Image (cartoon, rainbow, N blue to C red; front, side, top):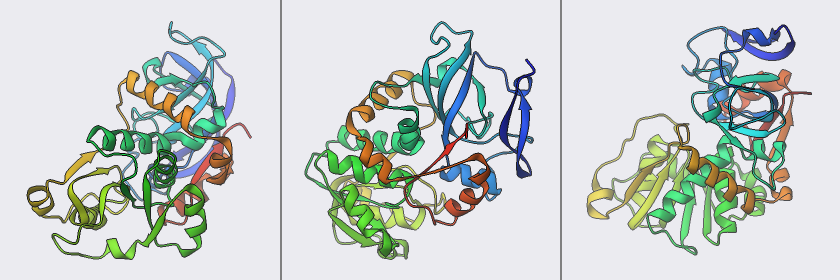
Amino acid sequence: MSRHFQALVLNKEPEIKQLSLNELPEGEVLVKVHYSAVNYKDGLAVTGKGKIVREFPFVPGVDFSGVVEESNSASYKPGDKVILTGWGVGERYWGGYAQYARVKADWLVPLPDGLSLKDAMIIGTAGFTAALSIVALEEQGVKTGEDVLVTGATGGVGSFAVYLLAKLGYKVIASTGKESSHDYLRQLGASDIIDRALLSEKGKPLDAQKWGAAIDTVGSQTLANVLSQTKYEGTVAACGLAAGNDLPATVFPFILRGVKLIGIESVMVPYEKRVKAWKQLAQSVDAPALESMVTEITLTDVPEYAERITNGEIQGRTIVNVQS
């Protein structure tokens, strides 16, 4: 096929280029992409601050929503609305920063009833990861009404974690270093807000017990401090590495308090679990709340917002209207 379309292409530096459908990777389903998003990994890829992309030229974008244009799979037909998160898309395989994407059918899930393509990308990888984190806490016995800490609360995953936890009836303590974001977090449902500085500096191996559970989107020293302050037999779901992949913690929280640390993998999630999570998200979120946490941009804006997200300057979700 010789049809041409716009894409943001990395060839050491990001550039908007015209590509042909012939240049897309092999796959069973061709999707006309409507929306993608700017996640932290996207920021690292586009700015080159992280070793996310190793082969060039490359189209980044770790998630997208769109409409099936052509399909060699019995699972999808032209006109079907679909979502993709994970599976190395935007990292090892061309992703969502293009007006068309060709992918394996197994990587897609149908857009659930109650969500638009835009809604799906406001949720995106961030909301999907937050939902998986809450499921993990509940599987470990965390009950509605308990205190749950959310670190990195103004980011994409953090914002959704605060919102979803509050809707489910938990008391949410949000951690942020941005005083200007307090009203935003309270609007999402946070009951209390603490300064991230209290968790980012080196703390005690075992500190005063403060919360029954936590969702950590930051990692490193913050995660170590969260673990040291979690209550007896509490659970921490860790889903982010924004501060690094080291863990300067001791075994004290695990041995002396029985604290459980659950790692959240949102990339290679089995199909049934992905479909279930998306259906639950469709039932939980509402349009006004989604609109309150999103900024919409175009492909040409992506390099600027990629830089901002890696600098910790972004509040909520940033989605890319790929067709505009």
